[in-house]
Amino acid sequence: MQGFQKRYLEALLVVVLAVVAVSTFASAAKKSPETRTPVTAPASTTAPANTLVSRGWLQRCVQPQGNEKSGLKPGKKSCAIFERIDMQGSPLRLAEFVVGFREDKDRGSGVALGKIILPLGILLDSGISMKIEDGKPFAFRPSFCTSEGCITFVNLDRETLDSMKRAKQLSFDFKTVDGRDANLVMSLIGFEKALKELE
Image (tube, rainbow, N blue to C red):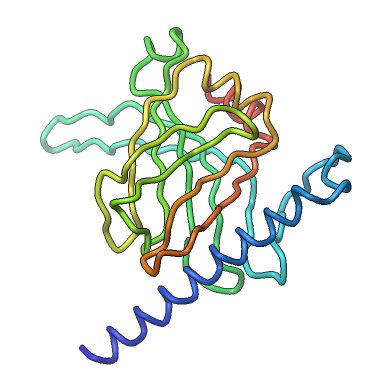
C-alpha cells in the first residue's frame, strides 16, 4: 500500500509541475511577437521540453450493444468530440475537454454539454476560471474528483460555441494545492471543423 501511495504522489507531483511549466510558457508566449503570426496546427502539437502533447480535436462514438436472448435492441450511437492533453511518454492524462449533444433537439438549438477533466492537485475552494482567448472568464467548481481527475459538467450555449469556433485557444486558471497559480492552455484549432462534423 505504501508503494502505491508513493507512486501516486510522484505522479501527482509530475502533473502539478507540468501545469506550472505550462503556466510559465503561456505567460512568455503572450509577450512574444511571434504568437501573432497565424500558423497551421500540425496533427500533433508538443508543448515545451516535450512535457505535454496535444493531438487536436477528435471524435469518438459509443453504441450500447443489444442482447438477442432478451430481445434488447442495440442502443443509439452517441458521438462527442474531445481535445486531450497527455504527459509525453506517459499514460498520464493531464486534461480533457469533451463536447457533445444530449438529444437531437439540442443540436438544433445549438446547446451542447461540456465535460471538463482537469488534473488532481487543484485547490478546490478557489474554483476554476475558463477563458476563451481574451473573452470574459467563466467561473466554476469541479463537480467531483476521482482517480481520473477533477470533473466538471458545463452547458455550452450557441454564443459560447461560436466563440470557441472563432478562437485559437482557451485557458483554465486555478490554484494548486500548494497555493501556486496555474494556467493550462488548450488549443481550439480544429474545433470548428470537428463540431460541424458532429452536428
